[in-house]
Image (cartoon, rainbow, N blue to C red):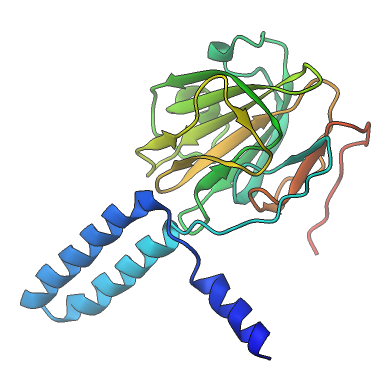
Length: 235
């Protein structure tokens, strides 16, 4: 019984990412100042401050570590699975690859994680628009931060942080030449966005459109098998 209570508490009181404390402080200060002159705002501002803290939560995740497994880089809904060339700035050619797009709303965890073990070969930032991240054209026109990663077997993958309608800052704290482990935190996007993953040629997705993914935990592909793409049903 006691352990169940502690697990419930931990699920709510998760760590806050350091990037969030500044915003939480601003929300709280505005709440106190406006609430001093108009007391009903103390409740409204309190709710907004609590949401801000919730947005910047940074929970631990249990990442499957078998060689070849690729995990989701983001919390959210698998918005699209389609063929598309990777961003040209990554210099991976223009042949279409399977792209998995994961859309994060303002209630999802926004800390992003590496989908696989590998070495960061290239980082490329490109400014752009702030269209709704759920739109297909957001991959091409929105502000983005792209990562090209070299796997141990020599293959390349790409994953891309894409700003959304209300996202105004893409953060990344890795550099070229760094080795990342699957599930390791590499960046964050503030206030609603999307992450695209480009699979190596011949690798099928193991998630379905509409499925909810958990960063660092949900397996989205297996690089070591030739399993066919999965289909899903709403039940």
